[in-house]
Every structure is written in structure tokens, then in C-alpha cells.
Length: 219
Length: 215
Image 1 (cartoon, rainbow over the protein chains, first blue to last red):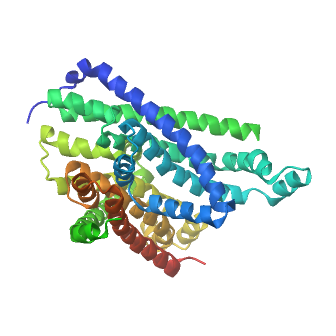
Image 2: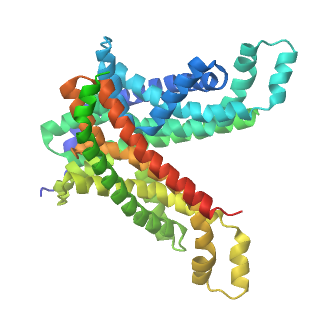
Image 3: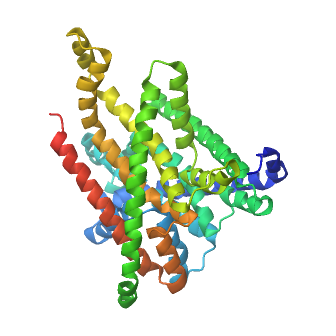
């Protein structure tokens, strides 16, 4: 048993901040993909013909019932097997994006159904097409109503992005592992990493609360 | 689809699924104990206990479970905690899910109508009697569904212990994907087994919830 010494972390500050940067990039890219695909899946499940809706429902069911880590392996190795040699970073972003798209879609579907039918009738009667009604009337309201849940999913996404270190993406956890392989100080580095995630999490939560308040006001 | 391969590796996956079940059940039990303690702390009259409870929930929910496992398993030896992968997995997952379950328990207790407490105090029940005979039986019913959601999350979260080399479903899947280069087939098998476990738990929660629902 050796004494703990957190000063071993200081020479690796740059490396860790690179890690933070990539974690932020992963989280934001994953968030954007999961948001738009979430809307797409929700709309497809509700309105698309069965040949499209059923496979998407099956996919959602599959991705909600299995661990993200397993899905990351599937996407990383699966893409390579079907001849798409994407870099690990892309596989990680796609994996995170699709995983959380499914959760967002689940929330969004309920949100879309909950939008008052009068809104659709009103839009249709003033001459909006079906697509226009969805795009300009229903979805914006559904998104606004489900914002807290989507925000929660985003908070989970930030934490779960740590998993992509397993397929070799150089984000925060991976940076720490690199430093640990040189210093043999896992405790100090992982505690530091935990603290960094905690701070990122606080920033994100504060930001989300701000957005929610903004939306609440504009209502 | 390479079905012969799937049949050949299937027995390994059944064994691995059993490890996933064991890890999940043990960490669920540990999590419930932790959750009960943390929820009591958060709802106690003492400021110090409340702060400790809130801090616990905030730290364990504010950082990735993966990092918590790594601190325990890789960092543990530095502070004199030497655990084998299985034990580290159970303790790590249990401490983590405990924070989430504490909130489910607290939610259940808060959900009991305030009038119930007032009435029971009025007819002469002590605070402890009120809690034990009036609040908890009703709160327990409200907790079934949120705790069930936690349990299902825990089963999927148990995949994380593959990273500290516990040979469970995800670890086995990763190993076989690496050796066979058949990611779809292997994913199919592992997904099937996860689905079965999750389905059983979800059904059990449904049955319990319906059996004890307050109408």
C-alpha cells in the first residue's frame, strides 16, 4: 500500500483536458444525432407504413433491452463486417447517438400523441399539409413538452459516453488510462476523472435548467 | 447468419447469463440496503445526515458508473482494498444503484398523502408507529414500479463489469466477436439472453404492481 499523492496528476493536465474536450465533442455529437433520430423514430413509429414502422419498433425494443456496451461492440465490429471501415470515433458517436435516439423517441412519441388534436385540425384546416403540420405545429410543441425528459437523457448520455473508451476512443477515461499506464496511479487519476465528470455534469444540468426556464417563460 | 456457430457457442452464453443474473441479484440486494440507509439519512431530522445522504446521491449519480468501478477495482489496492473482479463488480454496482434506488424509496415515502400521517398521529400513534404501520406499507406499493425500473437498468448496467474482466454476458460476447468476427450472430445471442432476463424482471414488476396497486 502506497500513500496517495494527487500531485502525480499535474503533469498530465493537458492530456486530461484533451480527454475532456473529446468527451464534450462525443456528448454533443451524440446529442445531436439522438435528438434528430429520436424525432425521426417517433414519427416513423406513429405515422409511417408498417413496413417501416415495424422494423423501427423492433430496433427500439432491441436497443432498450440490451446494454449500450454490447451495442457499441455490435456497431464497431458490425460496421467493419458489412464493409464499412469507419474509425472508432465515428462508431462511438453513431453508437451513442442511436442508443439515446431510442430513448428520446420513446419520450417523443408520447409527447407527439399528447399534443392537442385541435392543433392538428387547426393546422390542416388553414391548409397545412400533413408533413407541414407535423414539422411546424406538432413536433415543436412535442419537443417543448418533453424537454425535461430529453434533458435527462442528455445527462445520462454524458456519463455513458465514458463507455466508448472501451473501443479505443481517446476521450477522458482513455486519457486517464494512458496516464495510469505510465504512473501506475489508478486511484488518483480515476478520482480526478470522476471529479471532472461531476463538474461537466453540473455545468450541463445548470445549462438545461436555464433552457427549461427560458422555454417556460416563452410559453 | 451462421446458425451452426450460434448453436456451438450458445452453451457458453447460458453460463455467462447465469453470472449476469448472479451479479444483478447480489448488487440489487446490496443496492436496496444502501438505498434504505441513504433514503433514511436524506429524510432524517439531522442536518449532517441529510447532507451526507444528499452528497452520496449527488456523487454517485453525477459520475459514470464505469469510473466508480475503476476507482474501486483498480484504485482500491492503493488504499488497501483488494477485491476480486466479481466482488468489486457487485459492490460497485450495488453502491451505484443504491443512489438511484434511494431516490425511488424517498419518492414512495413522499408520495404517501400527508393526511395519513396527521390522522395517525392524531389517534395517538408515535412517530415510529406511524412510519411502520401507516406510511411504509403504503409507500412500499408506490415504490414497486420505480424500483423495478432501477432493477432493469441494473441488469443492463451489469454489462460494465465486463471491463473489470468478470466473465458475464457482455464479456463473453466481446470475446467471441473478437475470435469469430461474427458480430451480428454473437450480438443476437447475447441480446436474446439479456431480453429474457429483462423480460422476466419486467413481468415480475408488473405482477407485483398489479397485485398491490392502491385503488
